[in-house]
Image (cartoon, one colour):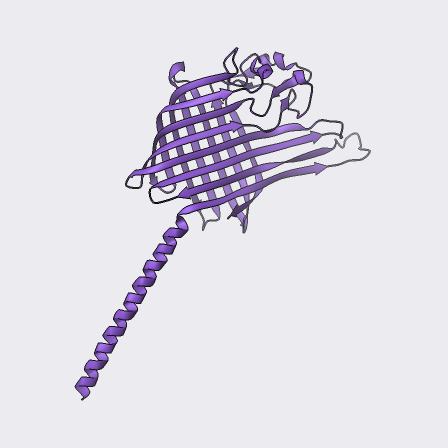
Length: 324
């Protein structure tokens, strides 16, 4: 009788352990399925950084200075889609700031105005590391720029405007992702297009907007190289990202342009961070202001103040990040 009870107990224990093991396996499979579902599909998010400063003085002393009002910031938005075989990443970036020195009769001066759009679609062809991909970008500005970097002025002082210029690039190639934090993109054939949507601005001497002399546009065909890295450190308190892109024009002795963007984000509170950014841009076909353009200089006479050099941009701001 005791042997029968012992056998029955062992049989029950084995049955229940198998039952719980099966339940545990089923739950584990369910968790894996939910986890895979959480990392697939669309994800949306972005960040908003503000840059504000103000100073007002009534009846100032001769040594006090003058009024100042500055406002601006940075907006980053993304919409990414990830599936088993493909990914589709989209992003929008706007850097915009202006300031006014003096009273209300003084015009606002532009500090920064850059609008960038990016999109890349990739399809896995090997090991989930090699993707055949198409990369597309567009860049312009929102507000007009007049001589003196002001936001308003006479028509003859206009230097640039929305879609004047606009730079568009499309490049099919191979995207190699050795790790989730690092990627390399190569396109043996890349098409770039610069368009100046203002006939008067396209006629400015010195090619300050990148178009061909006597035309409102410039077509370029060459190769493109891009690399991107991002990671988090110190228990996700510090995030660093860097990406660089190079284009070389086959028809112009491989002259082209480079854009290098860097961002360091230090978490202060939940969703709030201190961001430091630095960009470098160089285009062999676009001349930049290497000297201050004196007030009163007509837009068609700014060529002596232009040169072929890189543009450096840097700053810091408080940024609020949101994922939804």
